[in-house]
Length: 101
Image 1 (cartoon, rainbow, N blue to C red):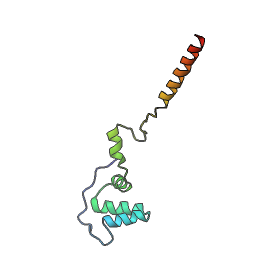
Image 2: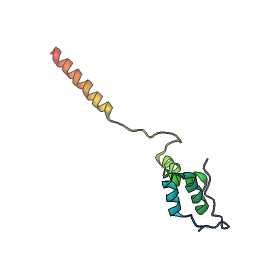
Image 3: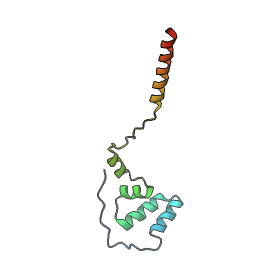
Image 4: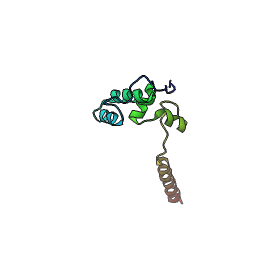
């Protein structure tokens, strides 16, 4: 379940030392995803899911809805292998028919 973004808390100190975009980038380079998500939430007032998606760069809550996919549904892709199989079957059928003539 997704919650609406909460407004920033004005009582929090938004420009603390060790916060900001550079701090989030440094935390991600060091593999500290939780710390980056918490910093982003503190600064922007985003909910947990939105902040996590922003840090991970997935944006799942928007992409799935735009593509018309249900949660967990994988987009279908056509490989064209069926076309190659059809051509082979038609060629074999043509060769078989020509052999009898």
